Length: 233
Image (cartoon, rainbow, N blue to C red; front, side):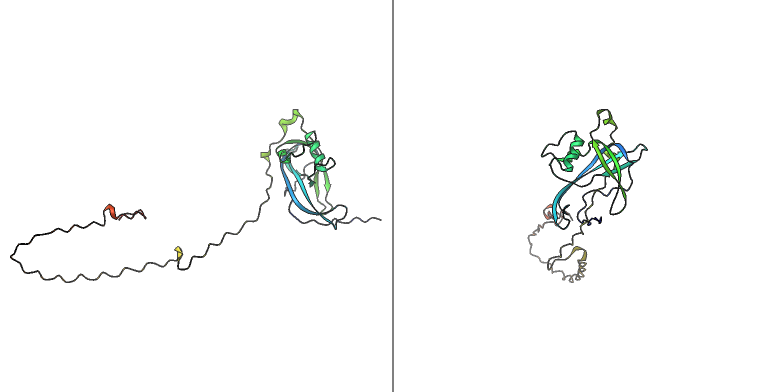
């Protein structure tokens, strides 16, 4: 007798989005693709032998829809291996959505913002018991209904945030260099020495002398402006 066992939990990077728990109603809806997320070099146990690990590349799509009651919902696909094989889930999914097989080498990110008609079913998680929406079928939107596809601006798709990096530590000051905030206050200027006593007036002379005028440069003239600091005194 076969015994059903819980599949091993897989640890690794988040391959999808952390969407709200609101469960969209089952049935067929017009939806819009909100984003495409690719995850590369993901280590996962193989289907045939969980003891053997393999490195794969997977892709997921997120959709937004407005139900008949006017409520907005978001949901996402399962992980699909990035493969162009005709039996691969991603190839089958895109063929049904586009209405024709995708072209080899084509970028799936172009599907972001594209409308679609999806049929939603409800499934129960074997790990947590939580009911989650599953896309049962997908198809192109008929021309008569393209105007009813909801706008992507109506939905706020959560973005994956990276941990903030700590602020860089300032480099230490070089030896002999003072940090501006810690520079000591300048020492007060020494008191001006008293002027020397005036020498007694010389005795008048009777012989005539020729007077000379000394010419000095004023420290307030343009030639003494500190051109480096741009400050005039």
